[in-house]
Length: 228
Image 1 (cartoon, one colour):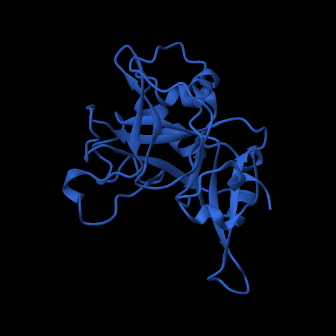
Image 2 (cartoon, one colour):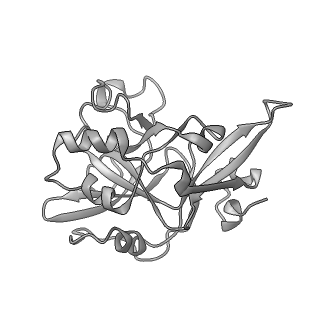
């Protein structure tokens, strides 16, 4: 999965699609988010379980454990194959589970004639509805952003047609599985099942080429997700 995605509806819309029987404990903005080109290291909304309900937090996309800080750029993704057993994300698994709501994500395909030239593609749900990426997050509350805070998106191997776009894809959950993902009472065995087999199938998505303007992080308008 390449490092850009969109989240442009209001948080109320995403929460409504989740149909959670839980209250959001902390305050959040009710206006449309209107982020059509979310880039790594920028702060964006994630949904997290909290005692007595949920939190909606704006968190940096990218995270490293304390012992790896400064040694390399903070990873933005965690591979489903190793996230449950690897050392790097040990402090986030399984209690750091979160959801990153989205409307789609971008991938770049090299030109066959000139691999240095790449065409961006936008992938979204075939039915146009919102997406929920399985994520892991560390969040330290406070008036100012804490450098320890951040999140990563769990990724899985791409299947069938999506392999032509990229060999990885976000672990996209249905609303039903997304509710399970942030359920405090879920078992580690069930979490393992979701990580291994819960990603939505390629037939649930559609994809098309979009403007190369998405390559510039300063560009944020809805024209970035229109077919070209």
